[in-house]
Structure formats: C-alpha cells, structure tokens
Length: 284
Image (cartoon, rainbow, N blue to C red):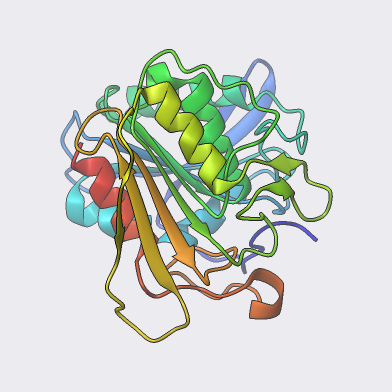
C-alpha cells in the first residue's frame, strides 16, 4: 500500500514548469496570484508518496486549497513533483537527488517571481512531510519555516541545521500508516521517529530549555477528534509546535476523506491544517 493520495486528475490553476536538474528532467507547478508584487513569500507544498508519473505535484493543488489562500493573502504557491512518486526523505523510499532539485526549484521560482528569498516556507503531507523535515534539517539556510502533516521524521535522517527556524508538526494519534509513537512505517517504508521524539529533537536543537506550554483546543465539532497543542520558544524564530490530533488518522485536517477510514483513519474537522499552517508562516 502506498502512503498517500492518488487523486483523480483534474485541471489546476497553476503553471507547469519544466526544469533541468543536472541533466535530469524535473517539473513543478506554480501559482502566482494576479498582480502579486515582488518580494512576496513562497510556500512549497510537497505531495505524499504513491503518485504516478513525473507531474505528481498537481495533486496538492486540490488537496490543500493553497491557491485560494495565496490569492487572498498574497504569496506564491509552489507544488513540487517527485520522480517516481516518492521523495528522498531519509527513509530509503527514493534515491533521487531531491536536495539538488529543491535548490534548483527555489532558484527558478525566485527568478521567475521576484519573491522574497528570506520568506520561503515548506510544508507537506506524509512522504512530503518527511521531506519537509529533511529540508529543515539540510537546507535551513534557504527556509524561514517548516510544517509537516501526517508524518514525523525519519529515524535515519542526519539532522544538523545550519541555523534555527520555526518548525511545526501536525500528527494524528490514530494514524495507521505513520505511527504516532514511532517505529516501522506501513508497507516497509522505513522507520519513523515518534511525534514526541521529533519535537523533542527540534526543541534541543533550537535551545528551548523551558518546558513546552500546553493547551487543549475547545471542541469545534463532534467528530471523534480533538487537538492538544505543545508550544516551545513561542513567538521566537526558534518556535517549535506540535498539534497532536487525538483520534486523527493519516489525513490532512480540514481536508477530504481521500481514502476509506478503514485504510487511513479519520479526518479531523477540529482544525483546518491549510489555514493554520499559512497563518503561522505568514505571521513570521
């Protein structure tokens, strides 16, 4: 079983951009709101594993709804595409040089749009979330923040960021594919740290010495899920957040039930992951 989202093909309000990376043909989708001035932020949205073809980034357009928020709040939305449907996130699920691809993609996006190189953010779901954590570890000099959904961090990933940056994790406690408590990912897709170990690693790297502030969000709907938040180094460039979606599955909160609950678990309506991530990024 693949870890994510084979969605129906659909038209997307984003330009397909072809890219040569060290002789390898790559691509991504780009959405630039009409009239967007130079110096705008950039949000990269990395898809989950399991897609087919070389233009898999398009799945995240509909999955996240980022285009609508890009138009409302004024940022460049970028949807990268992997080779063979998977990102090289440290778990051995791909051998492609995705760090070189990310560098080339960012250079191309910034040249095309005149966006702010100091306000580049990354997010992703599942394999894309793992890869966003890998970028935070290995390309911190090019990022202003990272948020991962439906993932934690590869247990085999060397993480030595060259600078501090804010990091957020949104993870479901009942995820049947990427275990919240860590261990083997479904379908022999490597070993994941637990959500708590992932966050604790970032707390240590960021120098967050005090215990995290915790809170339980008030219930918005009766859907069998709830949100528990842990926040460290709040309001600083080193901020680390964990949104523990209790009862949540391998899903994008506020998104679609893209596969049956028996396979991926429950979608929480207690928060909208897209709104939460974008607001947190743009408030930096």
